[in-house]
Image 1: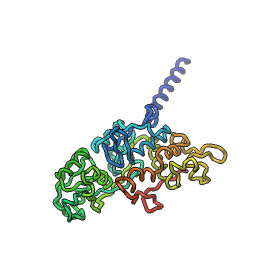
Image 2: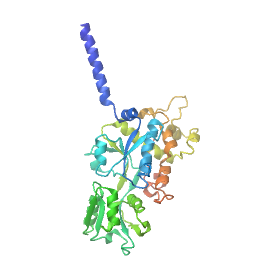
Image 3: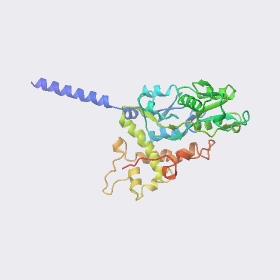
Image 4: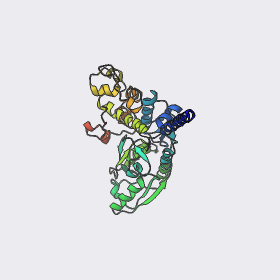
Length: 347
């Protein structure tokens, strides 16, 4: 009987160990390996772009650094995997990367049948068209593109949007598609197509790579909604919560006036929302508990803001009016300023 009881205890212990292993998720894996593996573009100025020393910069890059800061209090603990549009989802589904932060549009099919979860919208965008104004001086609208040859990238939402737009306006067109951004740009540059189409932010970025960028004009029409944001795998809610609330922390920090320069000073704020964001202890000395709720330290958001700033700082540093892209906040302004960016409350 004693041996049987011991066997039962051993069996129960093995089962608990197996269950714990089965429940170990991405956050545990990231901590164990010591860095976040982030999937990014193969080079898109302002969003994710490497220099000659392979140092990555951009809005999407800074988001990954924010996640690393939330977990490790060190924004450098992230490694970047450049991915084509065709490769990106397979890399995430297979576990090759932990987060996909690569100008990727949130759609229903991607959010359901592909087994993905979008954690937020880092950039509200829309598909547009780029033309050579010197070559086509009379073209002022996308509605004048009947019969045009159009270059774009395969494996993206742009092909379907393009087909819908031309069909809706009863226009013919010829599609020339490539797997990589640089191939699309090269074809456009060499005159193999009349028009380059992708997300409007991407057009502003790619235009800077052309010999005479000022000759190339982004037409005014937006033909789609392109909400771009970070993506994780379905089935790991703990990791999803870390990534999602990193995004909300960036927005909330800007809403509350907390930035990389004043974050230490703001810890003495009497505003309860600021106190909750920065993990300031309750009046009785107990911890606020919001970091613990997502498996992080209480100063997780403080670490993010110190490392990369708030959302506004990230936007202005990478794509704002004082950068080569010169993009106004527009739809990416805070909700209280006429935009769409809205942080869920930390409470």
